[in-house]
Length: 373
Ligand code: ADP
Ligand code: MG
Image (cartoon, rainbow, N blue to C red; front, side, top):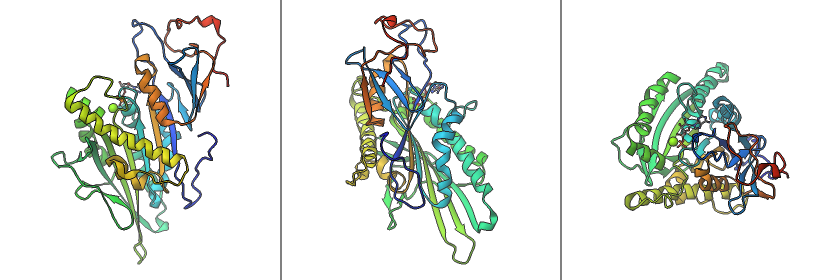
């Protein structure tokens, strides 16, 4: 991935690579627990390493477009990974931002955040309003901003702004735009207008009960911000730009956590959308012009016109440093990157924020910073 030329959109060139960022959340294991410390850590702004489970004297190093360490603020994530793509949706282009990773690794924190530390969604919506406000009247375009909010659960498309609605169909028009007939679309005139609709709908989804929490980790929550601009001249040219902000279902393998019956079926369905997303991202990033399997799941079908092609896409893979996430972290990293390197140097603990015990393997046997290259 490192070697591939990064995609900077010079005009209408066909660009398709998905930018991949990884965000490591702070260590949250209790200090009175085994004191194992983290199993993964950042090396610099693009590289990280994780202990190799096949051989704990080795680490596996990964390279990404961006690595956000545990100290990274919400503002920094927004500025480096999201803000740069927003201007495009005022010019009729599409964009998408995903948070990927296991449940508990920080997807909702990254996308939604809290009132103290707002995440990508509120920052992006504010910024879109600012960008529109800053547009010069003399350019001759009128802008209108709208929102939809939906969930893909069990391969069903559900309208979060109209909770009683049934599974909605995904269609494609003659210009290859993807649309969902019947999905609520609300025109919003300010950020507080947005908040008024968004907050109750997302509270419904995330905090009502344990059951709903489980559901929220099994469903993909998708916020669509649509910017339509119309030229004031007699031609009335119109351009539509779509921004999808997606808090994906947890990437953990539910088969391992002992789910049965309906749960297993649910996670199977979710895995279909996540699995297909992984194939789509691979296919886009490998640069081979093969068929991109958008149609194989609801999620990728919906995102077809906003992922790859001339769209601007960012995937933020959230990972957690504790050992109990180890295999989910490993598979999330493998999903996010095809470029990795096994390094024959030990994992040392120098960067640990909490006073963790040394690994069983004597720390002083090995040099500091054991990453090497
Ligand atoms: P997910 O949505 O992936 O299941 P959450 O966003 O709910 O994970 O995060 C799990 C917990 O970790 C939450 O309590 C959240 O506030 C906290 N958390 C996640 N990322 C960070 C971070 N970067 N800084 C501080 N706390 C975080
Ligand atoms: Mg979440």
